[in-house]
Each structure stands twice: as structure tokens, then as C-alpha cells.
Amino acid sequence: MVDFKKLREKNIFLTKKRIRESVSEDDFVIHTISNIDELAKITNVLTKRLRNWYELYLPEFSKKVSDNESFVKLILRKKRKELTQEMKLKESMGKNLLNKDLKPMMELALRINSLYNLRDELKSYLEEVMNSHCKNLFTITGTLLGAKLIEEAGSLKKLAMMPSSTIQMLGAEKALFRHLRTGAKPPKHGIILQHPLVASAKKANRGKYSRSLANKISIALKADYFKGKFIGDKLKKELEEKLK
Amino acid sequence: MVDFKKLREKNIFLTKKRIRESVSEDDFVIHTISNIDELAKITNVLTKRLRNWYELYLPEFSKKVSDNESFVKLILRKKRKELTQEMKLKESMGKNLLNKDLKPMMELALRINSLYNLRDELKSYLEEVMNSHCKNLFTITGTLLGAKLIEEAGSLKKLAMMPSSTIQMLGAEKALFRHLRTGAKPPKHGIILQHPLVASAKKANRGKYSRSLANKISIALKADYFKGKFIGDKLKKELEEKLK
Image 1 (cartoon, rainbow over the protein chains, first blue to last red):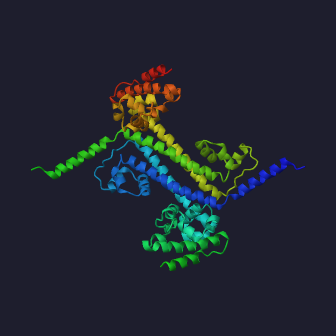
Image 2: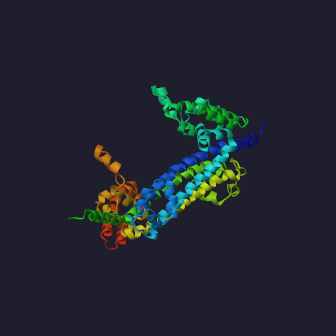
Image 3: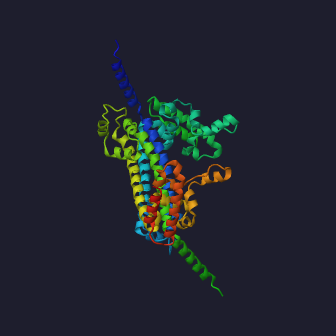
């Protein structure tokens, strides 16, 4: 007679093993890039609050420094007096707050700064993972764009199996289906528009450039997924020459 | 002849002075309570990401602890081995990650924990401000509800000038105007529903209870705004006796 209890245990054991082994570098890439995007939104919300709050204290400074990250770092590093002197301001419109009213906003600034640091750490971690996981793709696209492509596709395998025309359109699904439904103009590129070679091109050339870029990405991906040789350098050079 | 240049300078000086003097404790209350609300949303987003990420490593634990804050604090305090033993788990479905892949998620957990701490600091700061700014209101409503009422109204002055029926409806504007427009049922309470006396009441009593609560709040506010005596204790006792 078959021992069902043993069979069941063996089955559960194997399933757990399979689940455990299914964790791959794709997961790290996807979580990291998603978190980087979330952090960008979150630091924006928090810095907006911090600016409004700090404007009670020194409104002129918030108006002067428009970059969020430098704003946070500067108010953490310098006191009000220093900042007023640097701006050559005789007298600020802000109220000179007591320490107890200043503390909560400075604590907020500390947290925002620490979130900026986390973003930088995540970026360098992502670079490391991409470099070992898909070196060819990484060489052509850089860290963030490559990771976003994997995120859009769901995994390196799925991305590697896509025709280059699909890679070209990844992230432009809305425009693509609008084209198919209503006959509006088709999109020329999805997120690969972020690549410096495409982004810096003239508008008329962007379609052509994205096609060439997607072609090279597609070749690089095959080499990455099937553990081929490192050809990223060569592909990148070819691309740069073509698009000169 | 009038010296226009001097006049202009004097004018700017006075305007700046007025702006400076317009900063009041209302501003601190409103920024702090808004920031507390933002932090609640942000920590939720980040903990959701952390859970998904950590589930690659030890999925059983994330399923077991449903409270976000305790989840973050526990994975920071205890190692995987401890947690597995506590759950009496022979073997986890998660992958035993390398340190380098574990580090980014632990860094994220540290940031989330630090945001929880900020929320606690802001709450005690807010309590302090409310206690000196509007002690009567604070005694009846507690920190968060009182601050939210000021936030909804825009300032303590505006809130103090409102009839108690408006205070009762603050935060339920959408339902109120739907009632006026379409004749749907009128709302019985706005955010004052959060008060423990109303929240714990039977549904049929909530309308009556919110009316009594709004009445007392309205009296307390007049005493706060016109710097009257401290009557919060008395009002609170009356209210509790009435709603017994």
C-alpha cells in the first residue's frame, strides 16, 4: 500500500525547496529599483512639508535653493545666522523660533537626509547586482534603465525572450494600445528614451535611435541570459558609432 | 516733498514685521499634524515593500506578524535563526541570503524604524504645543483630534468662531453637501467621530453624542481663544456624566 502520509511530506518538502530555489537576482533587482522609485516620491513629499515649515523661520532661503536635496543638506549644516549672512540679508521675514519649535523640523530634515543616503546605497547595491547578473545589458544601459527594463518585463528571462520591438516599446503600453484601438500615432519609444543617446538626440531621430538601441539591448540580453561571452563593450561601441 | 524712497523702505520694513509676527502656534500645530498623517502613509508604503522583500528570506514571519510597526522592530532585533526557532519552524521556504543581499533591506528597516520614532517625537511635541496653545480644547479632545480640528478650520481663531453645529460636521463636507444637493441623509458627525466617547457609542446614539461633544468643544474654544479660565476639566466631567 502507498504510504500517503510519507508521500505528502515528501511533496511538501519538494515544494518548499522549489520555492526557496526560485528566489533569484531578478527579485533583488526588482525590489531595489521599485524602492528607489518609491524613495524619490517620498523624499519629495517630505521635503515639500519641510520647506513649508522652514519658511516660518527663514522664508528667503527656501525660495533661493530650488533643489530639494541641497536644501535639506544645507539647513542641516548651517545655522540661520550663517545662511542670512550668505544671502546678504539684513533681516529675514521669518520668525526667530525657539529651540523647541525648531527641533521637530530639524528632526524631519535628518530623516529626509537619511532617506537620500539610503537611495544612494541602494543605487550602488543595484549596480553591483546588475554587474554580476546581466553584465552586457548593464554595460549598454547603465544601472537604472537596465533595472527598469527588468522590472517592466518581470524577469531577465522574460526580457531576454522579447523581440527587440517589444523592448523598444516597454513602458509605452498605453500609447501603443491607443494606437491599435484608435489609429492614433504609434509611440516610438518606451522607457529606453531615458538612455542618454536617445534623450540627447533630435526629436526627429529619436525613433530611429531607439530602434537601434533596442536591437543592441536585445542581443546583449541573449548573451546575458544564455551565459554567453561578454560583448557589452563591443555592442556599445557599435551603437555609438552608428548614432554619431 | 515726500521722500518716496524712505516711505517705501519704511513700508517694506513694516510688512516684513507683520509677516514675521503672523507666525503663530497654529502654524506649528498644522504642520505637525499634517506631517504625522504623511508619515503614517509613508511608513505604510515602505513597510509593504520591506515585507515583500523580506519574504524572499523568511516568508513565514511576515505572514505571522500582521502589525507593521512590530514587524519592523522585530526583524531589526532578532536574527533569522531566532525567529525560525520561535515559530518552531523546521525549515523556512525562504532563501538564506548572503549578507550583501540582506544589507539593503535591513537598511530600509532602519529608516522605517527611524520614521516611527519621528512620529512619536512629533506627537509629544504636538501635545506640548496644544497644552499651552489651547488647553481647554486639548483636555476634551486629546492631542490628535484637537489638532485635526484646527487643521480643518485653518486656525484656532476660525475654529473658535464656528458654531458648534459646524464643528460637529468638520471633515464631513462631502456628505453634507450631498445632503443639501440631493436630499440624501445628512451626516451626523465629521472627524469628531474619532473621539472615544463617540466612537464607542452605539450607532443610534452617535448623532446625539457628537452634538453634545461639539457643544462642549465650542465652549472650550471660546475660553481658549479669549484667554478665559481653565474650564476643560469641568466641561469634560459634565460631558462624561451626560453621556453615561
